[in-house]
Length: 167
Image (cartoon, one colour):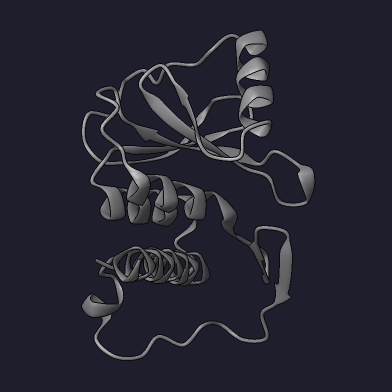
């Protein structure tokens, strides 16, 4: 029982570390490119950010398709409906997707490219957290919570250390 409890505590701490790191990336002003890069660094999988309609907005990792594939509108709407009805990221043709939707509006989709279906719990958590962190003007949106930012974030310490994903 102690081993199970330790594993649960470790998983919760790791989830909190991932969330904190992604929030720092969002607050740094790196935008969608920064979020995609952060999730890629956390998972080692290629990552895409698409808008609601499937247009590529950011890519991190190798093998970026050119041109970027885009589903027909009806298939995209069905995929979004399915993903919105799921508690966890949804698998779709070699990809894991998580919908970014603060306040119920679909803002975009965070995609982890995983054709071999090797992504595990760590990758799912990073994808979920990446889809909930977004900078919107001077307000930080984290899930459904909105906090007013009174000043730009202060970065202390070694900049390279601050950009290292939690391990």
